[in-house]
Image 1 (cartoon, one colour):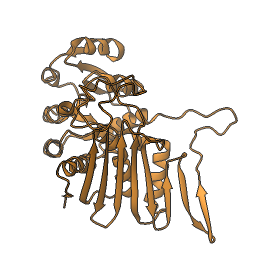
Image 2 (tube, helix red, strand yellow; image 1 turned 60 degrees about the vertical axis):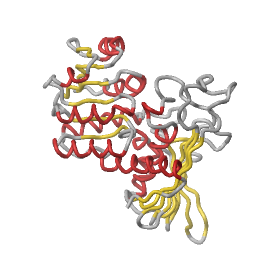
Image 3 (cartoon, one colour; image 1 turned 90 degrees about the vertical axis):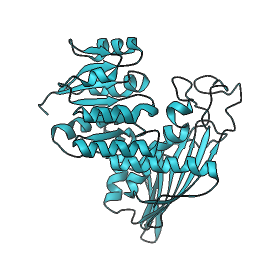
Length: 360
């Protein structure tokens, strides 16, 4: 990795500061040279903390995209603007990493994919849960066919009381939804990736607004404002695939349950099963006995030392940059992310109509 890669960041809010910029800063041949935010002070702050000495701050992303020296754009804005910014960046001859979900609507996601194909530039979506140690181990086991045919799965994204109260998370117009499109998208991406199955047939969905008007909620980030809580507090999907497989998707920011966990999957195959309920567990039958296998996923092998392991976000950023330098496919392909968005949209649509949505 000798080539210098020049990057522009569009959207300098929470996800850019907590994930994208810190991870990119650890890659020696990456230079962050441009930062854009509608709140100009945020862009200027990012310049000081992560930029090169000559880095520039912008308020209008169109102006940033005029810089022909920039190779890559990271789109870290609310969901509503993902498509327009990504397409403009691709058409400006930049590769694009867009934060999840791919877009607010399936139509917008298809526009993004078409632009990537038309321009020949790389496009990936920020599904960093694929890069966790447990995810990587289970993915290799699935590709080796250890589980056999995976015909039933669950995608888990359940929080008991953890509603994000900052930014535009509670704004349906800006985001397109609540926990389903925010964290349910991670669990669904992980599950489809493990199954290597991107051919949904029928989707049924239910969406609930049951707890959003409550107060004294014991929420992790303080009480939410019921007047601003315009998205669902929980949503659930039942998905059947063309090959007959079934996926159940569960998502919530606020739900009266103790069965919590997000970015997790449960897989049931003809040879074995797996879940992430208590670390990674693989279950099956061997020598006429049932077994449960729990692989050791820590980096270290010494007492009192866990070892140094690359974080999922750092690994995501590194492998994305490597795909650009080596001209290889990114780990998260836009065609895969599009299917995730199509299913999420179908769940919302089914919940409104009370009818199944056919995706074939």
